Image (tube, rainbow, N blue to C red; front, side, top):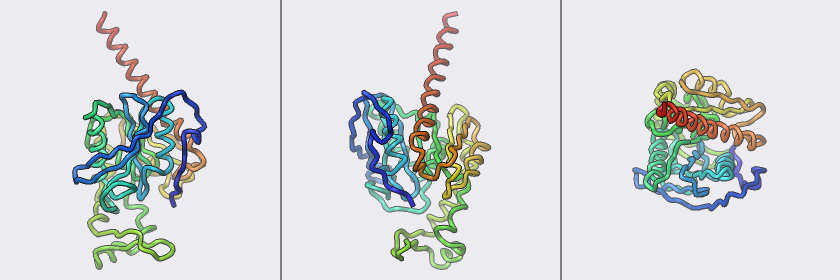
Length: 287
């Protein structure tokens, strides 16, 4: 179960003189649905986009704390709700991996249209899959951070739908998922289930450009997505770095500061590397 976060900048145990403004931004996707997000505005040209996971939203950890950590460093960050989640319009669907890629595309295009740059996209859980799928389809981001994404999308279904989910969904066309009190929370249609089962993570990972840097982070105590999935990502992505956080659960409940530090270091090292390459090219051009 995912816990809600009422985190503030102070909760990150960080201090900064950077002035941060919190702006509610509404972006329309390709399906005429309004996507709602919060921009941690610092005035930087660059905007880091943070994506939530399955049946989650922009206001849960680690999305809030990651966006706050970037803002403290002077980098604007945008966390938003995919269609059918949180404050955004649309209906929740079980699969929708590439539909959420389209939502992410709409967000990135929005910032480019207002003369901002999006070089880094970050996703937690299902959002980790979405940012990787995005990078496999569009070659316009330089840093991708996959936090606790699931490599094998066939796993984890029985826990939610039951062992005989394929037989039941073929028979009835849908499965209603209830909570512990017996109340129906959402419906899984055959189409949405097939969307998940036919999303080829392995093939997508191999299509990510070598120029795109990918970081996968996983907690060793994650009981929702096994740590082995992170190791599979490492096998299939060319330019990949893997970091395991010992003792961390799926939401990094007690490891928020460590998670933010790892992500920030990865992104800042990219900037340093790019600057060094640019300086080297300048020197060579003067010789």
